[in-house]
Length: 228
Length: 41
View 1 (cartoon, rainbow over the protein chains, first blue to last red):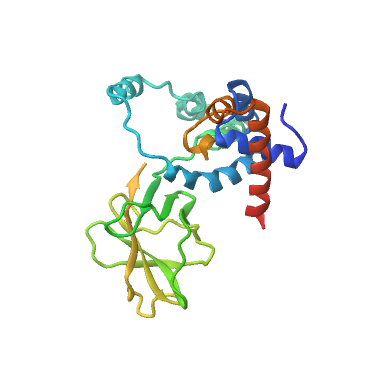
View 2 (view 1 turned 90 degrees about the vertical axis):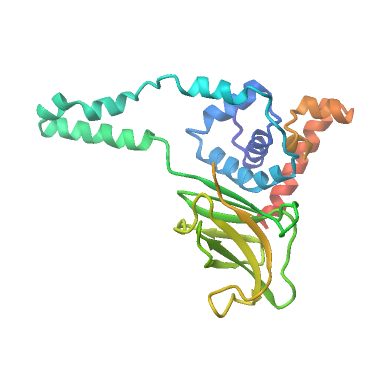
């Protein structure tokens, strides 16, 4: 039973994201996500705030054979969704009248709504050069780029952190902006330099960012962008 | 952190810290509630 009280709802969402719920409760939450906007909002809130914590987990090697098992599973033919067959049905289009067109438009709209968002997603973990301790996590996809501090890192007094992207094979960093003092930078558009193999770096710059459009201070965090 | 990073459930956390299941649940709830207040400020 999904609670209506906002505090209870938020706690349930938090428990869901933490992964502490038992199976029946977790699948109830998962099922309600599609229809319950408040619940979805609460789950997103917790995901955004808790996922950077995953960085704290020590890396684990998957058991041998995992990849073969995944491969065996994904190479099975995948049934095409019914809506896209309708879309490709030539006879339907040939005989379509105004009424048919309207119905088809409606099913197309449904098809578009129900097709999961695709497009590449990227992730980068930034750490100080020659060190392993993660300092920042960057995630990027169709909804843009989010860079978040994992550990408390503040620039020296009277300095700002500025984020740079270096396209694969390029040597010229391009500024993605100054990181706000709260340690979180969000860009709603994905910069073109940000793709698999690109480098993200954070340098120390004067307040408000580098005056030369190129890094002037030391690079304190660096990480490479990988497709997920 | 135990629950999230190590992927433990309520009952597994209870076992790990040797505390009653009910207490673990209420600790996590209280934790989430105050964490949310602090994050939303």
